Length: 307
Ligand code: NCD
Image (cartoon, rainbow, N blue to C red):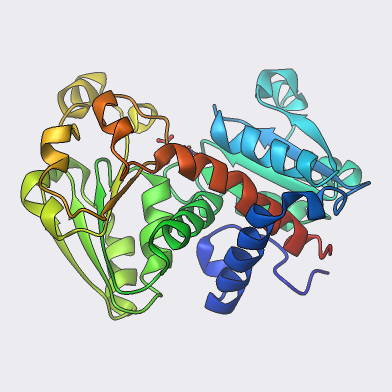
């Protein structure tokens, strides 16, 4: 059994020391990726995507390939035995006979946890419904540390669909463990932050304010984390259509922000950041994509206890 962590289901599975170790290993990989090209030779990663993905799947797959390992899996569950009625538990047990590590994304909350209870190898949650997305948080932390040089003393604004945005739930619960972090939760009143996230922030001794006014909030922020309204989690299409363009970050709004604020987004973007903002040096969302691959390389090395 791994001495690091066996499974990664939520960012809280990692202690602060483990988080810092991961970020620092990822930064070593960024500097000298070629030193790690053979580190996972002979190992196999299974990526099981029961829900659409571009970045997370490619990011894990490329991370494993760049470490010299191999990848199996699917991105369309209709091509797997799930279509024949196989349970998640049996799929986990079976795939873990082939693979050394499993990465799973599923529309249902709790699926990664369930898989981890049945698999004979480590399991990483790559997004479970509207719940958590821990490796996006690792990506975000590496981006913040690389761009701002710190993970403490920050005012963090998260904006958009705070109710269903799993990347936001993971980031906020995780960052509330670092020193001197203040949060600004910016959302329409229909899409406010779940109580359990707010309770965690308070329990960790941090403060938050809630607002639906991006222009008023933006001047105070060190980080503005934008997110898409999560169409697939809405019961009513009409409600989605009404809320989808509630916030659009434009160059005009960026002119109200600090000169060194950074803009992040887990992507995919729909309409919430105008394309004109992409050329602003404070826009970090495409850089963030690259950091995602490096931090996943670090995570695979640590979870498989490879050098
Ligand atoms: C996010 C997700 O899947 O939760 N995407 C990602 O992994 N980078 C965000 C989203 O889909 O809006």
